[in-house]
Image (cartoon, rainbow, N blue to C red; front, side, top):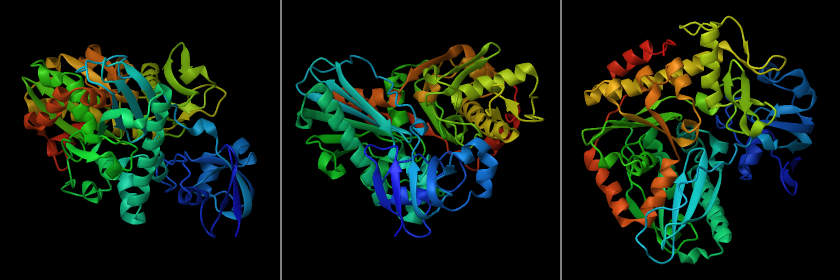
Length: 501
C-alpha cells in the first residue's frame, strides 16, 4: 500500500493511500481538514497542494488554471491528483481563511448570576465561541477556527449532497462536535476556568448547520418543499451533543429552511424586534438571508447568491486570507494584513468591478473583452466568467431586497437603516455595493456594518433569560417568503443582472 507523507502540519504525518483515491479523498478519510469549497468535485480550483513523488500527470483543468511556475513547483489540485506510489504532500498554510473572530462586545447586559456563559456561532465557514462572566457580563475569552466541514463543501447544499451521496452525516456531526469541544477547552484555558463552571450555553447557526450538529438528516432542506426536520428553539444536554458541558445548550430557533437561527439572533441583537422603524438586515453569503422590519412586523427571505463573494468560482478568488486584495480604487489596492497579493476576496471584488465600470472597461451588460489585470505584471486578473459570477450574485441580493420591500408594501427609500452582518458585510464599501447594483442606490448612505450578530445574539441569549424569551417569541411576528417559483423575483433577477447601481 502506498503512503502519503503529509507536511505543512506539525509534526508531519504518514497516511496510507488506497489505490485510485485522490489526495482529497485520502485526507477526508483520515479526517484531515483542507479547504475544498466544491467538496472535491473539481469545480472551484481552490484546493491547491504541493506534491512531490509518484502521482498521475496534471489533468486538463490543472494545465488551464495553474501557471507554468506552479506546475514546475509541483502545485496540484488535491481533488484531481491521484498518487501512484509513495509521495509527499504539503498543505500551503496561506490557503486557510484568516481567523478573525468579530468580537461581540467587551461587556453585555447581564442578570448578575454566578458562573459563566457561553455563546456559540456555528457558521458555514467559521466557528466562534465566546465566554462571558454571568456576574458582570464581561467577555472573558474568544476562540474561532475555520469550519472543518468545508472539506466536504463550502456551502450547505454541498454538505447536504455529501449526506445524500456519501452518507457523511456521522462524519459531519463528529467534525463539528469535536471542533467545538476544542474551542470550548481553548476559551476555558484562556480564562483559567473549568468547563464545568459554564452554566448556560446558546448556539446560533443556520438550519442546516443545526441539523448537522444534532445528527438530524438535512436532506429534506435541499429539495422542494424545503421542509426541515426541526426549526429548533429547543434545549439539548451538553452530553447529547458530545460537548464537554454539564449545562443545557439552547439552540436558537430558525425561521425557515434557509433563514436560520443566525438570522433570528441577528434580528433580536440589532433590536429590530423592539422598534417600529423600517430597518433591513442583510447577511451576504452563499444564501443571501435578509429580514425587513416595518411597523413592528418582520418580513424575511433567502436568495441563492452563490459563493462568488466568498472567493469561490472566481479565477483568482480567495477568502479573507493574508494577501487577499480587500480594497481597490484609482490610487491602488490594499491587501489583508498588508501581505503580498495572492488573490482577491469579496470586498475587493466589489471595489474592482466598481472601478472597472468607472474606467468603462466594463459596460452595463457585463461585457468584458479580455481579462482585466488587477495588478500589472502579475497573473491576478478578473475574467469574463468571473464577471458573470458576480452578476449572478449581486442580482440575487439586490432582487431579494427589492422583492422584500414589495412584499412589505414599501419602497427602498422608506428604509431608514441597513445592517450588514457577517464577516464580508463588515468589510464592504457600501458605495461600491451600490455602484455595481448589489444594493439599490437609495440605500448606500444608510448602511451600517454590525459584525457578527449571530455570535452577539448567542452570547446575549446565554446571559439573559429575557433575551431568550424574545428569540422564542419572534416567529409569531415574522412572515417568511419562499422565492422558489416566485415569478416576480425572477423578473427582478433578470432586470438586475445589468450593472446599473
